[in-house]
Image (cartoon, rainbow, N blue to C red; front, side, top):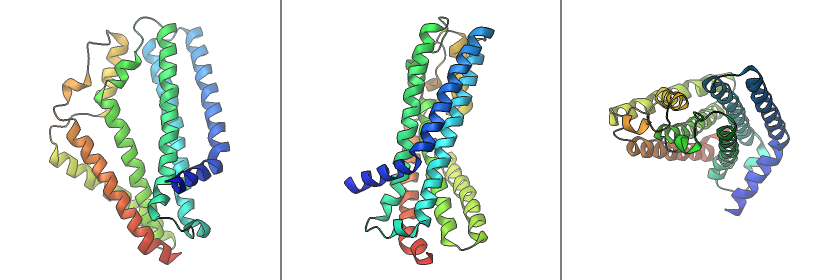
Length: 251
């Protein structure tokens, strides 16, 4: 475990300058958005939408950064010479990415708490967001998406040349379609979606927070959530197999 933490620390040092710059720009953009919204008297709904776009943007930047880190770890010969399990190669950038996303969530919670004090009484409460099953479903689905991208990068490294890139892209879409098909087949009544979640959030901003809840739309929440976690474990196992048996052989 200590070796894994050392790898995470090493990956953080390689990306810290870039991530800190992105974080500073994000805070400046949020501050500018807050001032602009107050001056122009934006509605709460419009203000939350623009804020979410900024949070989504910085989250995408973090995801791209950890995916690039994973790709470099596979490509650098000296990294693969370390006497460590292949699992650590996968978990190191993944844990770094999850930690970064947790920091973004914490900033978002603090931001919402601040807005709840400064904006009108119709402002969205943090507790209402965290109570939504759609919120947690999106977090798990986001982690699963990152793992799928990792696997597609691993598949691409198995094949040499430009053909590997296209095979990796094709593998990503194939894996995503198969996983979605299996989930729909096993849980046809599962109705949690991003649209449901944001529709609930929008109505909570406009009305009383207790009036609309995504939970009422979800007859079976834990089943699909556990299914996606199991899928992630299987994909990580496939990645470790490819790294041990295929990627290292191709150098």
